[in-house]
Structure formats: C-alpha cells, structure tokens
Image (cartoon, rainbow over all chains, first blue to last red):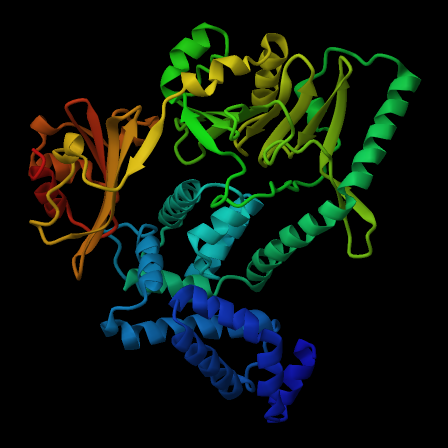
Length: 185
Length: 368
C-alpha cells in the first residue's frame, strides 16, 4: 500500500491504517529506534508510540512523505523516552550522540528566542546541501538515522578511527557555519 | 539543553535530504550486487573495445594532461572493496611511517613536500609475501578541508585495487551514467574515477611496476593525483623496500605499560573510570598510549600520548608541561574541545566535550 492510500485510511479513521503503516514502515522505524536507544523493549515501545502519535496527528496533518514524517515522530519519541528513563543510566548511544552535537555549539552560546528551531533546521539543511554528497550522507546517517560509527565505517570501507575523524570534522564545519550564520542557540 | 535543541533541529531537516541519505545505502548495496554479476561482462566489453581501439589507432600518445584521465566521468560512483574491516584479507602488517626520510631520499616514494604527515603500512599474506603496501600523505594546513593522498601498491588486484570499470545500471539493467574514464598510455590502461569536487583515483597495472591505485580526497586536484602517477610511472615501485622484516611491528597491549604510565593521568584519584585504555609498542618498545575516561555526572575525556604530533594538532599545542599554568590552559582551551602539550619527547592530546579548563588542569597536574 502506498503513502496516499495509508493516509486516506488515517483520514477515514480506519484502524487498518495502523496495520498498514506498521507493515510498510515498521522495520524502518525499528532500525532507527534500535540505533538510537540500543534497547529492544524501549525500541518496541518507541515504535508503538510512533503509531499512536501518527494516529492522533493525521488528520489534521497530511504529510507529503509519510516515511520522514513517522521518522521524525520516532526521533522525538526516542528523545522523550531518553528523558523519562535516563535515571536508569542506559542510553549510552543517545548520550554519545548528544555529546557529539554539543561540539557544534560554542560554549558561549546562549538560547536566543530570535533563532527558533525551524530556522535552525533550515540553516542546517542549507549547510548539508553545501557539502559533498558523501559527507552529507554520512552526517545524516549518523545524526538522523542514528547509525553507529562502526556501521558507517564498514559501509564506507574505512576504519572506525577514520570515520570518527570524518564525523569530528563535519561537526566542526557545522559549528563554524552556524557561527557564520549568526546562530545563537 | 543546547545539544538537544540541535538534535530536534536536525530531526526537522528537509525531507529530500533524509530520503536521499536513506536511498544511498540501498543504492550502494544494490549496485554492489549488480556489479558482482555484471563485472565480468563489463570487463570483457571494455578490454575488447580497448584492444579494438589500439588496433585501429596504433600506439597512443605518451603525453596526456591530467584532466584527460577523468574526462568521461559524469557521476561519482565508488567501487567498494569486498571485505569487512573486522576480517581483513591479509595475515599481518608492519609499519613504515617512521622511515619517510630514508624512503624519500632513496627515491622509493615521492617527496610530497606539501604533505607534512605520512603513514605507511605493509600488509602480508600468511607466507610473508606482500599483499599490498599503503602510503598515505596528509596535509592539514587548510584546516577542515584537509588533503589526503593514498597510494596502494600490490602485485595482484585486491580489495583496494579494482581494475574493472563499472557502468551504472538502472533498474531495468540498462547502462546509464559513466563513472570511469579509461586512458591508454604506452600500452597501459589507466582507469580514472571521480569528479573535480569528489574523491578521485587513478588505477593502472604495468608489468615492471605492479598494480598501483592512487586516491585523493575531494580537496585534491586532478593534478595532485596525476603528479603522483607521473612519479611512480617514471620511478617504479620497489616492493622489496617494504618486505616484512624491514617494517616495524606495532602491537597493542591492554595492560598498563610501565614505561608510559607516568604520561597517563591519575584518573582514578580524580574519580574517573577507564572506558578503555591501551598502549602501543613499536618492535617491543612502548611509544604511544591512549584511553577514554568517564566520571558519572561530570563528563568524559580522551587522552592520547604519542612520540610525534600530527600537523592537525598544531593549533592546539599549548607548549611544554613545565610552562603550563591554569591560566595558560584556560587560554589554550578556547575551542572547548582539544588541548595539547609536551612532556619530555611525548605529545599529549586531551579531547573532551564536557570538561572545563579547571578540570583539565587537575588532570594535567597528575602528570606534571
């Protein structure tokens, strides 16, 4: 079933929509959830929450790409789950990812209401488009899909150290770009 | 938290960027499968067409501009080697990174004066014969847009050296954009891959040299790669210089190595635990160490000790440990990520996302 047909089911409030969306994007969402949370039960919970949130938000939302729409819900759900359960001191993967991202922000930066999250997303998209294709994909694979450094290193046939160094450079580049764009976050 | 603000902003990047990155993975895997099936046919077709070209045109010109090696390429499609890094196709390796001066003065490797950092490794089959030799030169002077040239030399084709040009096929199996240019020079076919703004490579086999694969980063020009090819073309490649007995045996040990213990921080006293800690020996002599250390609720840091300092870290070099003070550390630690200093002949680099300059100073004091 394609995206339009699944969205039609959501709009008709047909519960078959949940069955269809989980059949089409279940494996995709489960992979991202496992990448980020690294825990089978939590990943399962995160994916189920994603279907419920999709049910509650479509309609009124009518996503252009259902795949990226559920992916976004899943990432938001994962970070919320991280907050909820981090006292249990799991989630090394999220910790590492957030630590990594802190490199993209200078220590002196402060939250500035003028630069909202949507503007920041647009700025990051512009920066990603300015990168060579391979660098762009590596960044998105790591920080959107949550793929591990080891996985990326194996897929791109370089050592894990070289991939770590490549990611480090990308973060530094983003940091410089954000500063040049006057981003205060 | 700012990093979560960034995480959420990355969540909302444009749809097409997310989709393309996802498709890229499938594409790489899919193309690789297709290549396995179609490689033999493509090889045969190319070899036949080149032979025909030679028959029709006689001997080709010997002087070729470097751009010519890449002239037919319209896409940047990589040929992925077929092995996992956890299971390398060779038996053992030896390090030659310390012999740059000797190798250069004996005309075994090109001078590459614009590249301050050098790494060389010989990889060997079970019987001790050479599987491949890898030479890497890095130039970090342009900051983030660093240049890297890598030469792989081997007597046979291997996972790094893939001769066969690959045409990209669409879903119906029809050939589309070309990613390899074949150029004939002195009877040898040179395979050029890449575009001016992507990673690029030249590959060839000559009977008196062997297989050579020269790779450059996207910041390298066609000329950079072409000049290396020219040097090897004229000077050849001396595999004997990289025999197993000539190289340094690098061994990684996980136990505390007494010789370098005084260069590693006393992290336990300060409440950190070691996530990993390892020591490297060269021909049995300790020469480098590194480790990652964590303190719950406080943060973590990476600490490395090495007898040399890559030019990449020059801007973070804060000088000799004897001259360090808390104030100087705070001044040097302006980017909040890296700080380097010297103790005796060792360069120590600290890498952290979370520690303050005061906490770093505490760590430095334990090795002062």
